[in-house]
Amino acid sequence: MKKKILSVVLAALMVVACMAGCGKKDEAQKVSMAFCTWTGYSPMFIAKEKGYFSDAGIDMDIQVIEDESTYTSLITKGSIQFLATAVDPNIKMFTNGADDRYLLTMDNSNGADGLVATADIKTLDDLAGKTVALDKSASSYYFFLTALEKDSSLTEDDIEVLDMGDTTEAGLAFMAGNVDAAIMWEPELSEALESVEGAHAVVTSADYPDTIMDSLVVNTKFAEENPEIVEAVCEAWYKAVDFLNSNPDEAYELMASGFEEVSAEDIAADCEGLEIFGKAENEALLSGSNGKSIIDISQDMADFWMEKGECKTTDLTDFFSLVK
Image 1 (tube, rainbow, N blue to C red):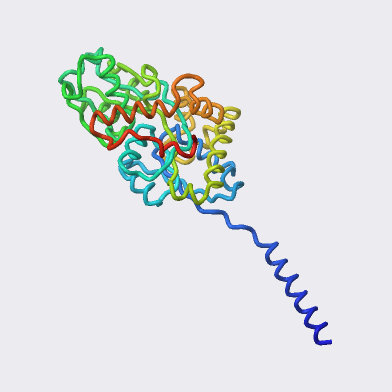
Image 2: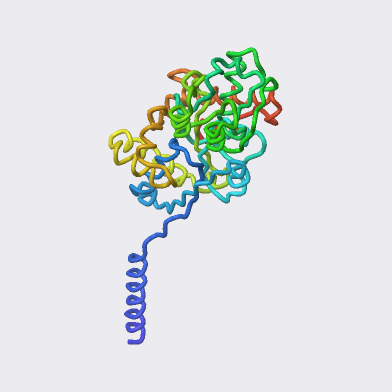
């Protein structure tokens, strides 16, 4: 009799435990990502608002951080797990010790960045002795130096380069009349052309393909321990790009929602000068089927910065280890 009662009690306890277990939902894994205010990254807000992250069991915290100089320590320490920033700063960070890995290319600037100058500066050679504002930590610096090397007789030493530490601030300095020219991106680029008499774009990113691209990287340890989360984040990005392509008006609203003082109209204007890469574009870029591969493009950047003393190595083998 006692055995029977004991069996009934155990069975009841098992039922209660099962009910409790079945009723308990798996907690979403908290993950953080950082990037600055730039339209090319903003499809991540689509992924968050449309539930692409949460559907995959991810509680995604997106942090908008304008000071890009902090990114290396954040991604290396694992304070953030994912980082979206330009390819060539990513290359410099990695070759100088950042513990991260490449996942995908997010966008390519095709006119959304440019060198805007006063009316008297008609060519790159006219920059001799002039003051140019830019952000040396941004990919626009690589774009600027590439333009000088390819299409002028000047070097950086022939120009007074003012490092603003922020691309937006560089544009504002030009619009305030404090410098002769500036490397800027949208929306400041269009604003400067419209508001400053005689202002014009001497060159833009459309003139130098593959110099200003953005990529998504992940902390190495996190990637090794959470491959399923890494894959889900990439898939969320691809879904967001698909949504952008099929529902642009709604997408622009969602993309603007995560930034301060950025409107859907600003996003739409920026997208005119951007190529935002989905899954098919990333596969083609990785293989190089439509031209240079992202690996070759990145190698060019590493070689360039090695010559400038900005990289400690040009070996990118580990950087691309997750996608090879």
